[in-house]
Image (cartoon, rainbow, N blue to C red):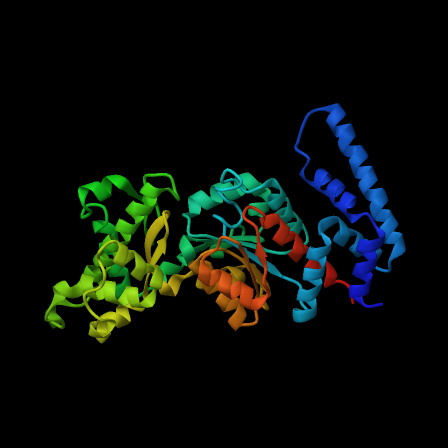
Length: 420
């Protein structure tokens, strides 16, 4: 019988909704020191196993079908089966953004939900490595990852952290490969640009701006964050102003990175104008901010000297509405970090699931698509370009704060891959 027919039978003949309720209760039951509560948990677990036994005895490979029914709705199960029919592969690594993907300030008090954490534990126990891929600093992401998943899991050797959007990779338990500082591989010219920006970004800022933002404690990237609630009007205003300031600073630092003895540029003070023109042409969102700040480029991108444009080609200016303005290296994006993390983890033939919401995550999604190395999923509030990519591929869009549901779908994909 075709697997589609078997799934129809599974969801038509068995009370899978109640089965999932028992499974959810057993999975996320909080640790309590109460005999009554523990007895209640045991009763629920016994009922769960009894219901699973009915499915186990009704199907060949019944243990797998029982787990499918306990983990996924009908829609999730058929989505997973469609994915397996298309790719004929199980996911062998997870690549996960954190903010507004695993956790959402709008729905979960900025904590990773317990059901999401439980699903990550399930993947770990099934042997699927986890790559946390974020723009945050290492210490920050390592702290809440250990808090949520536990020190033992994080240091198991199967978890890697790509931090600061790809400037470094931290994979505990791998000896000399535990920490890779990818930014150390950049040439001196590019490193000098970042050194100048970092040394000037706060001292050279206007007084009002300097009092309204702070510098994120990165190892390499230069990230300005608002001193206001993320997502609010004040944060939006100050980040828009910060973007313009950073663009001008990038322009000046790039010009200064060329040897002063060469006298290559007759108008070195045009650096800020060249930066505005280049990055506005490269990113419509940046152009919109420049226009709203009355700082639109005075020049065409064609006026940017080739040597300057080539250096801009290697420097990323990122804008996150009401959240951050950032300067990073395009050679050190999340995709490069993920490749390095998978190398350390020993994932030689990757088929990853990339979950994210921003343009930096999109680069990882595109890398996976271009290399037949996986699939992409995104929350419904993601950037337009991310949603366009996801909808053009497998339409794996999930509601805000519901990352666990997408992880359940992928978990079922891996279960179905066992059915041959």
